[in-house]
Amino acid sequence: MELTMPLIARFREFLQRRQAARLDARAIGLQLVHLHSESARDHFVFPGLNITAAIEHRGLRIGHVAYGISPLNDRLYISNYQVLGSHRNQGLGMAALWCLSRVHSMPLATVHEVKSSKGFWTKAEARLAAAGVHLLRDLRRYDLSAEQQRWQHLVPEPEHMRLTQEVMSTPEWPAIKASNDAGPSPYRQG
Image (cartoon, rainbow, N blue to C red; front, side):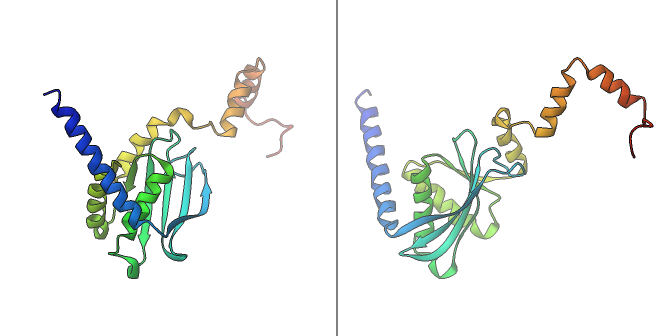
């Protein structure tokens, strides 16, 4: 029994290396070209980065990908992924996912898969898993809320809330509050 487990682990490692070599071969001439990145409060992965990249094969743009990186740097969320029609069914979409996983070295997750792409993502999940890459499939709105809770402690407080808290912690706050509660002042405009 002790000899069997290392043998199985070595065989699994061999199969992963073989699948990785296949994906590497398919990715020759493929590039992800960074177009835009930002960290915006209204985006799902805030304070993480949202990135848009073009997928190019031998210098020709064949598609694009929009994705976010969790603030914990533990998952990459693919929100928009498209390979143009004439370049489909050639393995380039799979190779671009492979490049994405190699560049960022983290598990991938798809957000709101459309029905027409389910077949592609099913194949991608199996082929990437064979190469040792985990793909979490089809996260929905309720899943995203749970994901955001994992990094909620990293979200900075909005400036106006921080300033309000700062004022409320001063010794002058009771007088300021009493003045505001008393109603309009003849000295204030409005």
